[in-house]
Length: 418
Image 1: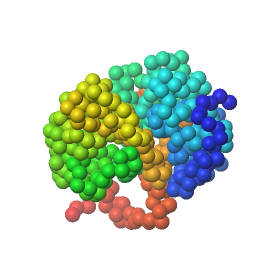
Image 2: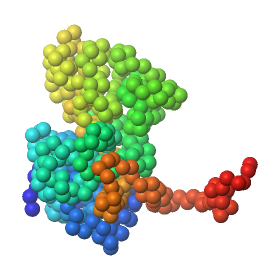
Image 3: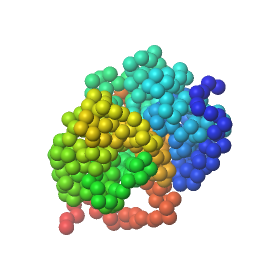
Image 4: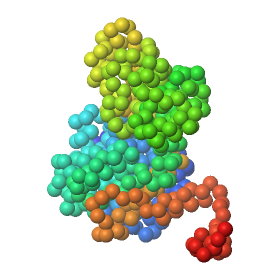
């Protein structure tokens, strides 16, 4: 078995950590039990490009229990937990190609190592696997029946491909499931981003001006948590509906050019490039702390910051200092990469329980229905979404009402008046 990890001797540390995460993933564990009996993925080669974390290990265990032949690489150079990579190799014989801190060349070499396994199913977190297939590995397309995508950023890229008519196989947007974006993006990103910023800086959030760039689901979660910790939250947006929602939620809204002058903390969560640019860095306060919790570090124009800096250096784990010509210092966290994974441990496992349940069930759906699907981006079927919500409530010991026959008749008729 081919693999490329930091140290196989970290496997026992990984085993303990994965077992701890598993305790908070009851939905995925229930799917795993069914997969072990039914083997819905038997003989299917699956290539995955995901954050290599303890929660991802639980997903890999579930997919392998379902019969899948898996290869895994990292979807972000700084998100890999090396002990998890070692655990999957040693205890599950899953080929893993991921090393924390790997450079760009190694990152793409690892993606190609996964693709060398000729996957029939892809599983992405940011669409790098799919874009590499369409760009450099087109010989693989004929053997691929479909794939899944975890993130907002990846879904945006895939929908752009579909609109241009270049998407060569069907994809399911796991990110668009309610049990994913409403919980993972909002509650998971909100908590884990604050966690990453505090771990990196050990600075007080209360009383600060905290600038959140964007107001999608991830940004809503971060704004909620920062506000809850006593920050004065400022939101920047380009969408008038999202901006209006932020205002009605009680936040100040302004252009980034204005927010740059007053912010103590900044965090981008948009999925776009150059959200905070050189001209914004030039107006920031001395000591401004800048992070990103969108998928890629391109949200921050770090090269532009370098151009206006007289000194750059690592002053603390996950903090790079940039000194401007007038002596002001700007601090970038986690090299501008996902701060919740670069400086912390990512989403809580209880949140990823639902996200990865969607991944597992969407993969099963693709195997069963790929012949009937077109080369477009599909939402997760509603029955899958609702079943995951039901299982999550059941695991929490929460019960809900069901419609009476009379209520069902009323909702399905037009004859009965008010």
